[in-house]
Amino acid sequence: MELPEFDDLRFFAGVAAAGTLTEVARQWGVSVSAVSKRLARLERRLGVRLVNRSTRRLTLTDEGRRYAEGARDVLGRIDDLEDEIGRRRSGLHGRIAVHSSMGFGRAHVAPLLGTFEAANPDLRVDLELSHLPVAVGGSGYDFAVRVGPLPDSRLHARVLHRNRRVVCAAPSYLGRRGAPRTPADLAGHDCIVIRENDTAYAHWRFGTDANAAGVRVTGAMTCNDGEVATAWCQAGRGLVMRSLWQVAPLLASGELVQVLADVPTPSADLLAVHGADPPRRVRAVLDHLVDGLAERLPVRPVPVPGAGSTAT
Image 1 (cartoon, helix red, strand yellow):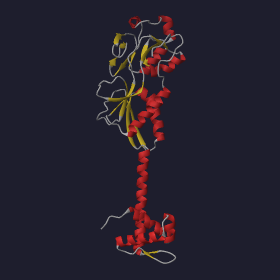
Image 2 (image 1 turned 45 degrees about the vertical axis):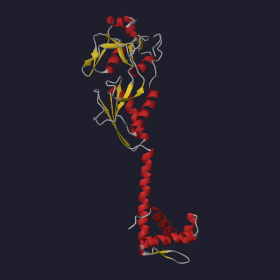
Image 3 (image 1 turned 90 degrees about the vertical axis):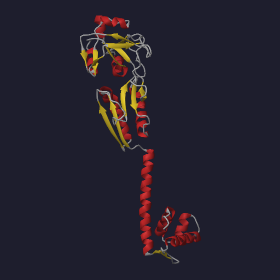
Image 4 (image 1 turned 45 degrees about the horizontal axis):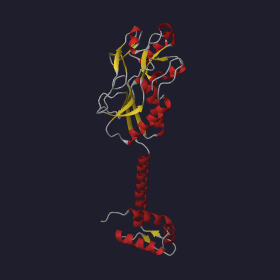
């Protein structure tokens, strides 16, 4: 038996709905003779009579009613399928699993993922915030947001936002101790050291990416939480080195002052580490993060009253 032809299904569904050959011909923009010939050809292919013809109306036979019902059902399913495929092509579907550090994830990644999901309601977003780094390959995450540089050049990553680290102090601290003029002067200052993953980052790096060198710093206060370290710095307890995105509002308000502003620091770009060929939904959310972070974060160090020039 021949496979059904979907054009025949649409044709006969139209015949059943119209009720007359004349109306079918009008709707299709063809002659009544052409409609009659096509109907006869369909009946020959099926081997049954589908309609009883009269000069006024077409009356469906039992086989014709069954064929019309089946045609409407099949065509409805096809239309639903095409609508679904069209939505998938124009919209975004599926799950996006994201890993991010606690601070940046809470402050920026989570809000931007929220607006992205609101605009794409067929997506499911799974965000994991952690102080511990994660390897994307085999982890179940579509991408992980981290501060660069990449530990392995073979990894695939997209820059979400350009960033670098800056050294800051409260005006009250600078009033008591003065400001360091060179990285070597840090030896005579109280520096707040941040511990991450059981490692104390007591070496602050200065210089360009290719020629960066570490300067050992010391101080009476260490902490494993960057926000606490920043609060101590605001209270005048010492100098702190933080990412620009973390302290830009405090620099702009004058609550903190950037020191060693003319001394470059290595790039600490905000990266999304992902697989080799991310699907379209992942590329779309990365675009959204790039655009959103450009609006939320400064591109370069902000001018600070009394801080002198700043490095770009």
